[in-house]
Structures are given as C-alpha cells and as structure tokens.
Length: 361
Image 1 (tube, helix red, strand yellow):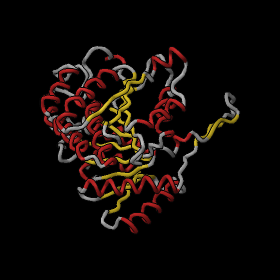
Image 2 (cartoon, helix red, strand yellow):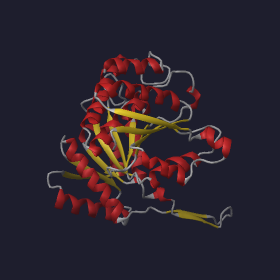
Image 3 (tube, helix red, strand yellow):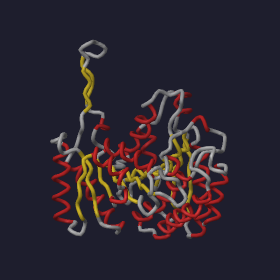
Image 4 (cartoon, helix red, strand yellow):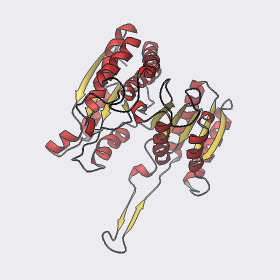
C-alpha cells in the first residue's frame, strides 16, 4: 500500500448508494483520528448501467481494480435485470479475476440487537465463517444435454482442487490463531455423502492441522448438523471453514441469528499483500426502500470497519487496524440506541444512524 489508502467504490443499486454514503461518512471521520490518508474513486457498475449499455463489466475494467487497495460495494440487484446477470457478471467475475479466494463472514450479535434465538445474547454469538470463494459449484462447470426436451439433463459439477482447498484451509487456521479465542476450527462439509470432494477437504484439513497447527483444535460438522447447531448452540463455534456452496447457505443462517442481514457484513479477500479485496453489506439492494432514507446502514459501516482492519493486517498498517476496531466499537455503542434493525423501524433515519456511529467514535 502507498501512503494513501486507495478504495474503489461501487455504490450499486437500490439502497446501495444510501448505505455506502454512511460507510464513507465514517471513513472520513476516522481517518484523521487514526492519522491516515485515503482517496476514493466511484464506479457506476450495476443494474442501471447494464440497462443503459447492455454490459455489466469487462475483464479490462476489472483489471483496473488492481491499482486499488480495496473495493467497497454497496449493493447489487435491480428489479428490471433478470436474476444471475449481475451476480455472475459482476460479483463472481470480480471474485474470480481478482482471486478473492476467501469469503470472511463474522457472525456477531451486537449489544441491543434482538436475537431470534431464545436466551442467547452477544456473549453466545461471536464466531467467524471462512468460506472458500472461487471453486465448488460456482465454477460453472457442467451444462445441458437435450435441453427443452422431455429427456433434458442438467449437470453442475462440484469442483475441489488440492491447491484451492489447501490455501483456504491454511488461511482459516491462521485466522483462527489470530482470533485467539478458543482456537477451535470446525470444518463443515458432507463426508457421508459427497465422498470425493469431502474426502479431499477432510484429508487436507487433518494433514495440515496435525503438521502445522497443533495449537488449533480440529472439529468437524456435517452441513445439516451445522445448521441445527447454529440454532441450538451457536456459542459452540469459534472459527468455521467451509466450501463455497455450503458456505453461501450457512452465512445467511448466521446473519439471521445475529439479528438479520441489516447488520451482517462480509469480505471477499485476496490474502496477497498486493491483492485487491472487496467488502460489502450482505443485505442486498432492497429496491422497495430506495431513496426513502430508512434502510439500516450498520452492515455497510461494519463492512468499512472490516476493510480497514483486513487491509491494515495485510499491509502491516496498525493505524488502519485501529481505525477498523474503533468503528466496530462505535457500532456496539450505537445498536442499543436503535429500536429495531429493520428498515423503517429503527427509530432513526439512515443518515441519523450514521451520525450516531460518528458521535460514538
């Protein structure tokens, strides 16, 4: 990283620009407090652009992001664009081309946030899900045979390479060590049915853990059992590592037990110190609330905190890490003041919530 933190901003669709505004508001305030400089460059990729020119994003345009330290994404999703076009054409394209092979999803219940699980509080729900982000069913391997006939066959292949699995596992072990909580890493897969891909994951998990991470306790859950235990005993988990498809499922479940998508943030991480990672709130574009100043910006603000913390760790910039932690602490001071995490029911407008977090800094 140069002396100036460079962030590409894709506000995107629906309520994306509104929550992005609040996240950037926090960035502007925390920068002088922790003594760092930054610059942002805005890009218009999203539904409106696609409807105007019929193009999502090109490989050359994605390549331009390599000059940035990180990407901040508001939201993608437009009611007039068929499902899959923006998700595959923008989100997956960026993840794959920039080799953002780690998806990091903290599952954290903030103080004052209602949890749908009876008797569970912030001390019970605080774990991280490390999801492999560039392989598995998302590779697009497969196709149709005899399409649009009664004998139609559709295949979608679950791809797992030793290279891809091992680099994800090693990052997860290292992340578990950095968390320094209970030092327990749980692999989630389906070894009793998916005997090839799951066998590769499980063998690599045991071999790497035994050889290089003897201080980390290794644990295993079937995917269906993990869904059950997320609800029954979320306090059991410390760090989870999971393949792409199953990770997509359990992170949404994780978002619900932490109070909803309005407080859930995620990062698509390229761990290379010179790589470009992308951070985003998980709530989607919520077009029915667009322009009303009622959407919850907490997830977007938390995503900005993640951006600063992760980039700071990779670049060995302690002031960025401190800035990210400072925003996180300010969020925890703000959520008890909010009536609800749901859009239009917070007791404050979108911008007022942002102002509350700023004040808490």
